[in-house]
Image (cartoon, rainbow, N blue to C red; front, side, top):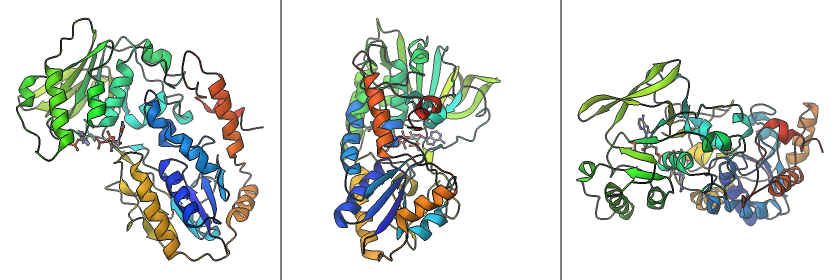
Length: 419
Ligand code: NAP
């Protein structure tokens, strides 16, 4: 009797888990269910548009999607079109691989002001996520505050700092590109509440900020009188890179990337729209002018009916992936927003092994049951074929060396969903 398994979320953790389950149980029927007609989750909508090397992982997922037994069910929102309880009744096991897409909040005054954005919304906007097509940040600004010293902060700074020519080979959203390329930004502030050793940048990402055409890093050498632990190569490399940045001659590069350390945000300032950020630094309080602020301080998973939720951490509590009988969680929804895409590979294999060891197939309705349920609810799922047509149209529309021109709103996507 084959396993019948539903995986909710077709991002990296969903795909790696599906692939691993297929290897361990080749006759398993695996439905990979996603709210969007476009697969790949974070690889399509989170990874920076100019990091095409990282996005290339989608080719591997595309191959996985061709495996017999694996089916993509797009345009079906769990929690909206069907519940987790309904899925659990239909399948032997349900794996939640829904990621962490809600922005963590700083919880300081002024966070609700206009042009104060979370990185989740901002990154998905410039990555052409249809839910954020109308985000409309005002980029007619000179000064931007980016809060957080992680790789997402670097992504946001780099995408704002690069020239149109530097972004030509990216798949930056066509809705965002004119705003980003036309932005008169000259000061980008990267604000960390701790020191250079505690920053969570990886070194390749940090070093890239020193190689931009029109932007130069600005680091105060006085912040660098610290040592990294001898056994931490990444932090040592980061300190060396920051020391190089402290000696950079910025002449000829009009955009400045200012690194601020030990600067704790106290409040966003402004009346309606943000005009500044109040910081608590070792020297005391100071106000930094900014007309756009992007918080890059991490993400929370979304709560789903019938699924336990740790509200403090913003994750689905679990024991090595197990949430309850027949219910599992993979990736950021269970682990929290840390690690790179490849982290999910080993995790996917471990989880698949656990599912196969714990769950016995019980001849449940599986995909036939889901199809009947969706038909009763008048929900029309999309297939891998729909995605293939979207993909082909995006690739065909690409210009000037770009890999694709993304369909960036529901209106343009929906034309491909009717066929
Ligand atoms: P992250 O690496 O955890 O960085 C979050 C930053 O936000 C930290 O500097 C943290 O400071 C700060 N922060 C958190 N709460 C704060 C608060 N209340 N006030 C001020 N600062 C606060 O997370 P991320 O940048 O969102 O990245 C998520 C994961 O994706 C990471 O594993 C990252 O490496 C990965 N990623 C990788 C790439 C890449 O490989 N190119 C690109 C993007 C993301 P503290 O350390 O003091 O808490």
